[in-house]
Each structure stands twice: as structure tokens, then as C-alpha cells.
Length: 189
Image (cartoon, helix red, strand yellow):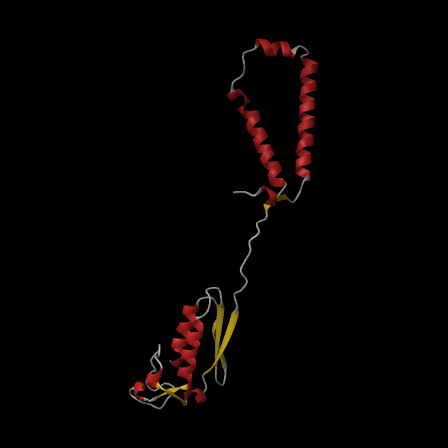
């Protein structure tokens, strides 16, 4: 529903021009019909009433001119919306250098991992990465980051950068947390 209090017009001159034109046109028409036909009122009493179809051209012309005047006035409706600004932006910078390949003091069975460690990735070449007893630093950091991401609000935005010798933007700040998690899953490829 339209809130009439929020309706405003950029220009008011088309309305005044339209009113002035209507007054002038009405005065001229009234003067002209009175000058040529002084007893016009007598004819109105004797002539049968005109139908709506006879007046359609003047009705449509008036409607169209009224709409043109409204358009020229540039009406705008201002709508106020209170936006919850409690969303935050986070930029996660993730170290993928060789130092992150070293093991931590956390045993593999102490923590339930969401992503399996891949063979030969960030570790010595082993056939079964789960046979390594300790978690690597990058695995622990990734799991911590996944916990952090699961606590984000829907409107929070997270961006991610991987770095070692060079920095790589993996994700610009986005509210699509699933995409950021995909990037984390691909980090040991």
C-alpha cells in the first residue's frame, strides 16, 4: 500500500502550468460559446442528453494530459527501511608454507576431522595419511577455521587469502560460506 506521507514531487511547475492552461481553456471556451450562442442554456434544455460515447474524446484527452502532468512532476516515493548493520566482514589469511606441514601435539584420534588428509600432501610421502599419528599444523588450523565459519551469521562476509612465498586470493569477501569451505577443502591439492 502506498504511504501518502512518503510521496514527493521533484517539480511542481507542471501542475501550475496545467492548472493555468485548464483555467485559460475553460474561460476561452465559456466566453466563445456565450459570444456565439447567447441562448445556449435554452438549447441544453431542449436537446436530448448526450451519451458517454460522445464525450469519450474529451475524457481521454483530459486523462492523458493529467497523466503527462503527473509524469512531468517526477513523483517519488521514499521508503525507509531499517537495516540490521550487525553483519561483519572477515578476511582470513592462511599460511600454507612448509612450516605448516609440521606436526602438532594433537593426536589424530582426539579431533574429528571434516576433511581427510591426502596422501603425500604437506607431509612425507606416505600411502595412508591417516597412519600419521599427529595432526599437521595446517590440518588443525583448517579445523579451527571451519569451526569459526560455522558460527558466522548468514549476512557475515568472509574472504580468504592463502600465502607462502606469494599470496593468493582464494575468495573475495562473500556471504557464501559454502564457497569458502570449498576453498579450504582444495587447499591440499
